[in-house]
Amino acid sequence: MNIHEHQAKELLRQYGIPTPAGIAAFSVREAGEATQQLPGPLFVVKAQIHAGGRGKGKFKEASAGEKGGVRLAKSRAEVHTFAEQMLGATLVTAQTGADGRVVNRIYVSDGVDIERELYLSALVDRASSRVAFVASAEGGVDIEKVAHDTPEKIVSVTIDPASGYQPFHGRRIAFAFGLEGKQVAQCVKLVGDLYNLMLAKDMSMLEINPLIVTKDGSLSCLDAKMSFDSNALYRHPDIVDMRDLTEEDPAEVEASKHDLSYVKLDGTIGCMVNGAGLAMATMDIIKLYGAEPANFLDVGGGASKEKVQAAFKIILSDPAVKGILVNIFGGIMRCDIIAEGVVAAAREMGITVPLVVRLEGTNVELGKKILAESGLKITPADDLGDAAEKITAAVKEAA
Image (tube, rainbow, N blue to C red; front, side, top):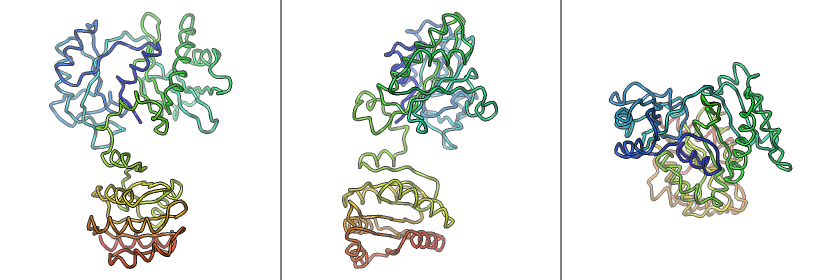
């Protein structure tokens, strides 16, 4: 789960981590009111969407102006103008895709005199099973480009969970930044506070880009991006309250209501599978046979008939889907339950696209019998290769 920049900065402030003052605004009026609560005379107006590259992004609407989603306002009147232009407009960045994202809120923050821009992030490094900090003196730019062109400018520091964060971790990062004097002590504290925040809130990723050195020599988090482990959200109702459903795919939101793991992809063959590993294998074999999967959908190990029906509805809500492959291994889940769900969904929704079903495991013969006696146009498959071959051929024939 992701949150907006203004929400991330509020969490930073709760942990005593320095960041410029700012106020979220959902309307032009609220943006104007925000300027009355900030010192000025310089303000920064930022579009709030779940995507990076906002400053370099472009709005689809000509009325939004040619500037990107991060703008420096030199007066309260300019804040008003930028708010009018941004709110309700569609911002396209390198991370949104061509469709872009509608800006429903902006963040008005106090302007800051910047001496230097640095990069700092923390993430769960699965290779070492530790939290790793990634730091670079080249901040405020695309860190991917820095890593590709000048990898020697990237420093990684992992923290052993047994001993936890120690001052030497922060000092190593401070020296990588080229900080001196009191800035080193500031960096040691800041990195430690970020580490504690990340653990306390079960984050999977925390990015500060840029971390700045101000003209007076202080460190401050000018931007912040946070992602949280969805499996741990039950421990953090305060984080769940920050969820912005307008920033998520409607089908993925609907899937979460039924405890389904769903991710929309760009292909034409819808997949309904139980188990993440089997789902990945199913998508791979579809590609092997020359087609592209339209989604990742894992119904889980103990899906009910109703859950299967909900999964079908979500798959078919994607107009790009030209065929469906159901691939189920009945371990905990019984194949007859899956078959009943498939038949019920096919009848209720009047499925017209090709449908191939491969069942194996508990009650597989009963499941196949239910499908065969349904009177519906359902193509059975004997194994995974047979299923992929049949669905790709059926989709090509239907086209």
